Image: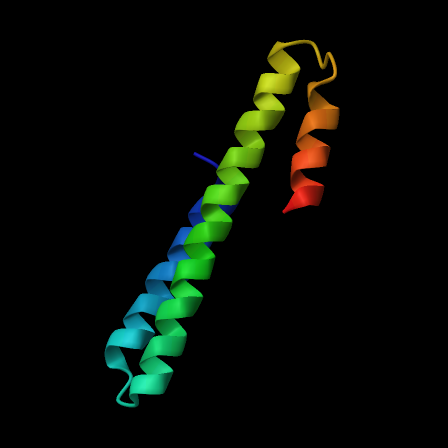
Amino acid sequence: MNVQATYYRRRAIVARQSAAEAMDPSVRAAFAEVACHWLGLAEHTEWLQSMQRESIRSGGSGERGTVVAVLRSR
């Protein structure tokens, strides 16, 4: 597993715990949203790593340009 993705998932867990402990509903919602963003970042990191592995397996034959173009479009 990707070390960065693991870190981001742990941050999401902390944010979820903070949301559960928050008394103010707006603070709870903010922590929940932060947790979702941490999880999204973890997924994006894993996707990017898989694209890089795919590019290496294919010998880098133009795939890297595709990854860069996709990332720029996000």
